[in-house]
Amino acid sequence: MNVLVVGANGQIGKHLVSSIQNSDKLKAKAMIRKEEQASYFKELGADTAVVDLEDSIEAIAKAAEGMDAVVFTAGSGPHTGKDKTIMIDLDGAVKTIKAAEKAGVKRFVMVSSFDTSREAILEAPESFSPYVAAKHYADEWLKASDLDYTIVQPGMLTNEEGTGQVQAETKVERGEVPRQDVADVITACLENDATTGKQFQLVGGSTSIREAIQSL
Image (cartoon, rainbow, N blue to C red):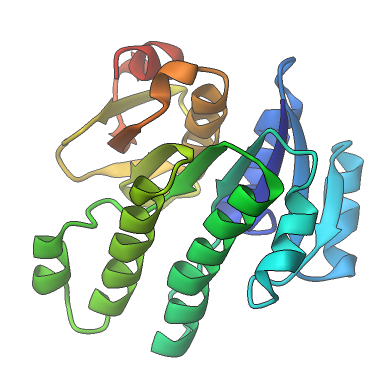
């Protein structure tokens, strides 16, 4: 399975490309914003496509041609304003969904936020609510599409080494999860068609990733 990783140069994205390349079932193509970012991925044996999420749907669709799946793990980051949150986390996600449809790619994995419910938007601090709202509507757009989707909602992300053990359920208590484990969960989702149509929260736990994914 050929997988386009959108947001590949991000912290989860880098772990994900590495995780995919270590799978005997998957091969990654990293979508990056700058050519100088390509060397990292070429060393992993991954193909690259230089496309900005603020480019056209057609540009993203061209990067997705020949792919079997798309993973959206891009984000505007905590230090940008509301404008970038809208353009990347909402518009960028919707454009990627449309691009996948245009390119004939059916499988789509979205890396979302831990809680994207309407209640979470209202309860979030003022500075964080635009991000939650953007993720909420991106998730809703994906669920309304004809794509075979999986929505992963990780808890507080850390740079700790992955443990290979998580808790993955529709609803879990808030907690932390290493980015490496998030990446390995995404890879497991891509390898398991049973995760199609599923949306789940993800934190560190005591269940192996394979078992947690199979039990969804």
